Length: 116
Image (cartoon, rainbow, N blue to C red):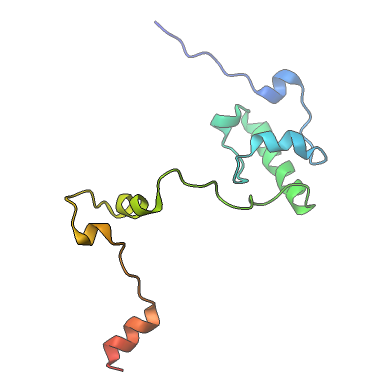
């Protein structure tokens, strides 16, 4: 029988002090987009995860850390295939499937329905 090995909090184990004055330490607990990683990814106990979030927010308010990254990382799927995946068009190839859908502005649709 296998037993789940108990995880040890990285901060408790290494005696790290989480502080907003050290943004380079806090950056390792954020993803590329700038979001705080969840507890299961950071491997912190609940107490230190709450403290981490508080210190990251303090550093953000003092402009030591960004709220978000400059841009989302580029998508590996080409733009032409991306819209097919999002609306689920994987049937046979036809002109409807090879041309992206046309988007109208709400004002244009309303003026068309009123007749003018």
